[in-house]
Image 1: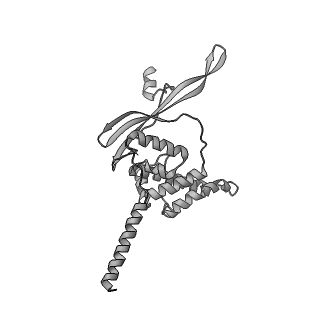
Image 2: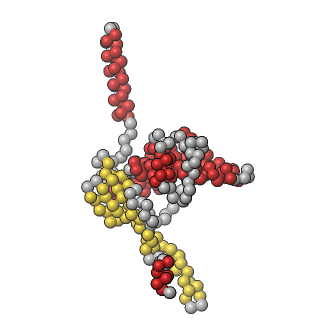
Image 3: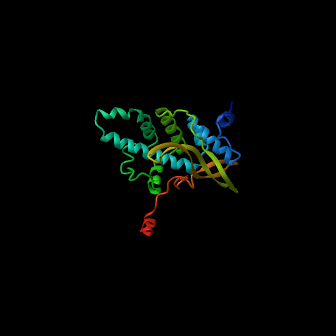
Length: 244
C-alpha cells in the first residue's frame, strides 16, 4: 500500500469515527412551547435530575446559577475556616461540592479576593467568577448532581408551581410562575385566639427564549422579588410620614 493510500485509509477511518461519535452524542431535548419547557423544569427539579435541569435553561440562566453555586461554596469555605474542630465535621457533606469547584478552576487560591460581599451576587462578581470557569454547562451538571446527592429533597405533596399569563413575541416569551397554597393564621375573636386556614398565592415573573427551535427558560426578569397576594402590606416610610 502506497503512502497516499495509507493516509487516505486513515482519513476515512477518522471521518467514520467522528461521524459515529457525533451520532452517539446526546442532544438536549427541544421544547416546542414555553409550557413544555416550564413543565420539564418542574419535573427535573422534583426528580433532582441535573442534566435535564440544565437542558431547560438558557446559557445565560446557567451562567447566573453557576455563579450563585460558586459563591455558595465560597461561603461554605469561609464558614468551615471559622468553625471549631468539633463543628468542622458538619461540613463533610459539602466536600463533593468543593471538589467540583476545584476541578473547574475555582480553587481556594483562585477565588481569593472574590469572597461574596452581600446576600446577592452582583454583575461584576458574577463576571469575575465566570472568567475562571472553562465549561459552564459541565460545572452546572456536576455541581447540581453533587448538591442533590448531599441534600436529598423529600418528594412531598406540596403545592406545585404553575405557569400562567404566557405571552409570546417572536423568539421571546413571558409568563408568571404561580404557587397557590393554604396558610394557617391565628386570629383573635373576642377573648379567644382562633386558628384558621387562608388561601395565599405567590407570583413570580419568568421569561423564555427560543433557541434552535426549542424554548428554554430565561432569567431576564428573575431579579424581581416575588409578590404575595392577599398578604399583610407593610407601610413604607413615606406612607407613615403622611399618616402622621
